[in-house]
Image (cartoon, rainbow, N blue to C red; front, side, top):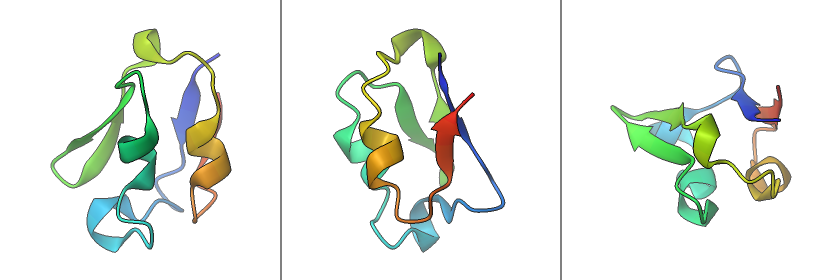
Length: 63
Protein backbone atom coordinates (compact mmCIF):
# COMPACT_ATOMS: atom_id res chain seq x y z
CA UNK A 1 0.00 0.00 0.00
CA UNK A 2 1.41 3.36 -0.99
CA UNK A 3 1.32 6.68 0.80
CA UNK A 4 -0.93 9.57 -0.10
CA UNK A 5 -0.22 13.26 0.45
CA UNK A 6 -3.12 15.56 1.30
CA UNK A 7 -2.30 18.78 -0.57
CA UNK A 8 -4.63 20.78 1.66
CA UNK A 9 -2.45 19.89 4.69
CA UNK A 10 0.99 19.68 3.09
CA UNK A 11 3.01 22.87 3.28
CA UNK A 12 5.23 21.71 0.44
CA UNK A 13 8.94 22.21 0.84
CA UNK A 14 8.93 26.00 1.15
CA UNK A 15 6.27 26.09 3.89
CA UNK A 16 7.07 22.83 5.70
CA UNK A 17 8.00 23.36 9.36
CA UNK A 18 10.40 20.42 9.00
CA UNK A 19 11.88 21.56 5.67
CA UNK A 20 10.66 18.57 3.67
CA UNK A 21 11.65 15.97 6.24
CA UNK A 22 9.64 13.28 4.44
CA UNK A 23 11.91 13.59 1.41
CA UNK A 24 15.05 13.60 3.55
CA UNK A 25 14.17 10.45 5.51
CA UNK A 26 12.81 8.35 2.65
CA UNK A 27 15.56 5.76 2.23
CA UNK A 28 14.07 4.34 -0.97
CA UNK A 29 13.60 7.63 -2.84
CA UNK A 30 9.84 7.18 -3.04
CA UNK A 31 9.25 10.80 -2.02
CA UNK A 32 11.09 13.50 -3.96
CA UNK A 33 10.91 17.24 -4.35
CA UNK A 34 9.61 18.45 -7.70
CA UNK A 35 8.96 22.18 -8.15
CA UNK A 36 8.50 22.77 -4.39
CA UNK A 37 5.93 19.97 -4.18
CA UNK A 38 6.30 16.37 -3.04
CA UNK A 39 6.07 13.71 -5.73
CA UNK A 40 5.41 10.07 -4.85
CA UNK A 41 6.90 7.09 -6.66
CA UNK A 42 4.78 4.26 -5.20
CA UNK A 43 6.82 1.52 -6.85
CA UNK A 44 9.79 2.56 -4.67
CA UNK A 45 7.84 2.73 -1.38
CA UNK A 46 8.59 -0.13 1.03
CA UNK A 47 5.81 0.80 3.51
CA UNK A 48 8.22 1.77 6.31
CA UNK A 49 5.85 4.60 7.39
CA UNK A 50 8.67 6.94 8.45
CA UNK A 51 7.17 9.74 6.38
CA UNK A 52 3.78 9.28 8.01
CA UNK A 53 5.22 9.26 11.52
CA UNK A 54 7.39 12.33 10.93
CA UNK A 55 5.17 14.69 8.92
CA UNK A 56 4.59 17.76 11.11
CA UNK A 57 1.39 18.59 9.22
CA UNK A 58 -0.06 15.06 9.33
CA UNK A 59 -0.47 15.34 5.58
CA UNK A 60 0.75 11.84 4.73
CA UNK A 61 -1.35 8.71 5.10
CA UNK A 62 -1.82 5.29 3.56
CA UNK A 63 -3.77 5.30 0.31
